[in-house]
Image (tube, rainbow, N blue to C red):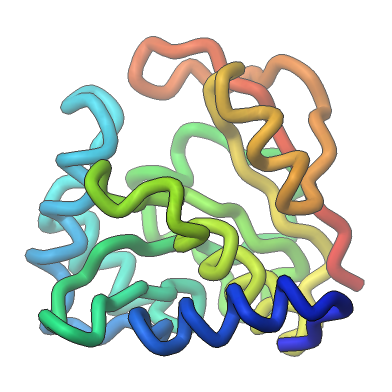
Length: 181
């Protein structure tokens, strides 16, 4: 990671002392599903079978944050790749839409357990995740979020495209995008 300011380097060093970021493995499916259930309402949360399938089909688009002291998964980002340019609801449930060579990465979940929030975990995961996707040649990262999260994602480098066509979980969503290459 490249940081421009001394305070960012200190924060990064402290983060690295407490947490590890790594690609998901199949053994992480149950823990990731539990994190998802703690972070999203049942109408939006990924089920264990879909989580297992996402890991099987798209592990290179799945980053987990682990507390070093306990080995516990405290957060993750998972996504699917496609040549599509908007995140449609079917991407949340149909992993067959994943194209490993797709030019865009569609982020399905950004989740951090409530008791671990406000420690920079989501920001650090997003920075690492976007860097990995950029290295793989992806053009854009796209996600949807509730209106209350727009400002957070803007701080992560995303731009608000406005209200999304998505109706996933019965919510109103904003579509956010970030240019990678």
